[in-house]
Amino acid sequence: MLIWGRNPEHLEELERARCNQRYLPAADFPPSLKIESDFARAVAGSDDLLLVVPSHAFREMLTALKPLLGKDHRISWATKGFELDTGKLPHQVASEVLSDKYPLAVLSGPTFACEVGSGLPTAMTVAAEDQEFARTLAEEISDDNFRAYTSNDVIGVEVGGAVKNVLAIGAGVSDGLGYGSNTRIALITRGLVELGRLGHALGARQETFMGLAGMGDLVLTCTDDQSRNRRMGLALAAGKSAVEAAREIGQVVEGVMAAHAVHQVSLRHQVEMPICEQVYRILYQGATPESAVQALMTRDLKSEDQAANQE
Image 1 (tube, rainbow, N blue to C red):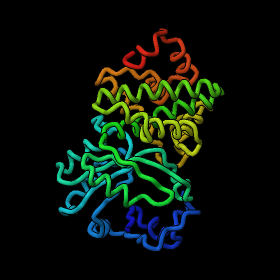
Image 2: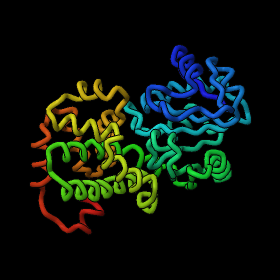
Image 3: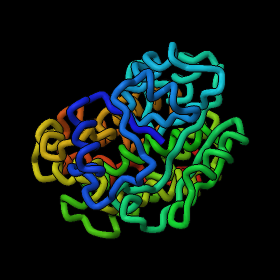
Image 4: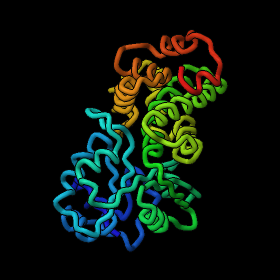
């Protein structure tokens, strides 16, 4: 088992400490994990590759990887979000770059790294059109405290992973304004409807959104302060800009770029997503958190059954 990263100094630090001192200091690396600083050697030394990069770096990573791939390689990723310029999901980007020559899979679901690293029981989803790849990958990453379920709904799993980050910013804004539990659960529930509505328009199965990569990941990200996206929302409610908040968080907050991409994709497919729309307005159009909540609460009343299908 090999790990590679783009920062040689960080890799040296990982090798010395045998853990990630910045993010997971209590999770020691297993003896079998080797740190590899040479990208080509890392690729050549592994058949199954797991990419863990932000969505805006995904295409670049695949492009660098392509000339190094052999016939036995299989590629998976934990990247979440639509590509900003094109509105494509990660599996579409991967197919475009790699020409469908390799088995592809996405990993998603409610998993905070700190808890996984601490060995706390965790479940997540591996989705692939190639179900044999999904099954073997799930077996490879599962152990007594980590359980991977399989799915063939790649679109649904990826849409869930993209949209939940936007909704988590909204949940953070709501809680930061002190609106309480009633507001939070209404936001999560109606947010799940928005997520499913966009997924349906893109070809996903609705039942996927009631599982780990849908409702599970959404609830986790909206309710726990380990979520960078939720913390972004809390900071916005406190009057900070997105730039200030991101600087304090110190990591990429995927929901910020996802809000822009989801906005564009929803317009393209004529899917109304009022909560995501208000998060977009706060981040990109200068709306205040208070005005965004007011806009949601003063929308026309309608049947929930009607709203669940198309508002």
